[in-house]
Amino acid sequence: MLDLIRNHKILTTLFILIILFAGCLGYRMKGPYRSYRLDVIKPAPGESVTPGTLEVGVAKRDITPDMSKYDTWSDVDGDFHYRPDRGDTYQDLNKNGKFDAVWLAGFHSDRPAQGVNDPLWVRAIAFRNNGVTIAMATIDGIGIFHEKFIKVRKMIDPSLKIDHVMFSSLHDHEAPDTMGLWSYSPFRPQFDYDYMALVQRACKEAVEEAVRNLQPVEMYGVEAPVDPEKFVRDTRQPIVYDKRLCLARFVKPGTDETVATMMSWGNHAEATGSKNLMVSSDFSHPWRLGVETGVPEPNGVKGLGGMCLYFQGMVGGLMTPLHLKVVHRNGKDVLEEDSFDKAAALGDNLAIFTVNALRSDKVWKVENPRVAFAAKTIYVPMARHFKYAIMLGLIHPGYFWGKARTEVNVFRIGELEILTLPGELYPEIGEGGIETPDGADFPVEPVEVPALRSQMKGKMNMIIGLANDEIGYIIPKSQWDVKPPYAYGRTDEPQYGEENSGGPDVAPTIHREALALLDRAHAAWNLPGP
Image (spheres, one colour):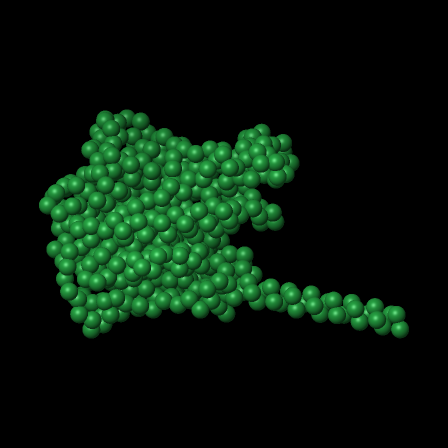
């Protein structure tokens, strides 16, 4: 009798544990904001538009971590990782018995910051005209998952009547981890939820202030071709770059007084390299600062004033300054080793290039600065380890039967058209040049055609990456390569990339959905052909 009761209790306990496990798994698979969907175009098809004066507002918030709130540490073995088993120590400032660190994102995990080199920001710009109000924010961070931005949208003051907000990350490799992938160890995670909340509040406040700062402006644009040898390397075949620096400048009417400069171009913010342990926005900081306040002699330029906002472009593939030889503006010194000097030189060169382009005779004035947007929730099939990580709620929480929920947007500000995509796009999808190399896993003709930029209808067309999400590398299906024999004659291992992608069907899905949204938006706004 006692054995029967004992067995009954064991079975009951096991049943309860199974139910609890299933409930927890179901909750994590469900994810936050399960019913959130976007499918909007404004002005809508057939909606009359009253021309008006373009208004622009900007604002920024500091998101630099306060290092006084974190523990300090000593890298005894000099390998730039926190390794207590090798003698690394920390000073427990708050006496809580654990190492509280700013875990830097990118490169590898267990890389705690030892200080701050330059500040991190959320910078926001708002646009209003013809009854439409939109805002765009750029964040000095590695990337942020979609549900975190949904929360920010819900936090924003509804009385401001903002029609849509887009958020993009710079993919900064010297900022705190905002994705939970680099915080110490997968088996001992130490994600900083307080810092994530600080970033979300900063996004909310910057967007709200930008809208409250709206003022009439005149808009100017220019597209400057980028010489890769000076600014960026492509480390994966085929060699295709984000080869256009797209620039928009907004000034007070009838003056040369800058309100804002908006820039978009693709390059990883990682010129200081993996051995850097200082918080920084890398070359982005001297670039923005140089555009705003100028670059000193020799061969410097006078700044444009106002606020400068850099939105990341197409960085997959991999667009990087690592191992790039950067010539200092003095024309003599050449910097190739990862360092802050190299990041500063690259940023200065980009600032000089930017200011000169915006002062050139190629600049054109926007005569009809109508504002419009389209936004669509999409579902992207995920494969391999990403599929199960999402299912378990470890990353990108919210599992939709093998797919991840994300988003694409289209914006029009006059003759400027902007397409936003939720990850790191390989430039050949945007610019053209996709290949089907021998040895790749899918011997098919290029799937992601035509090139996205060829289907955009602006006088200038920006493609902004890591927008409203970070879904990883967006790799052309015909170039997907994880199985031997490997493409491009490689014998030991494939090229880098697939380990940070959700699978071979991510790119075809995002490409298809982006083209569909562009077509719908163009039809609604009655735009001429590309």
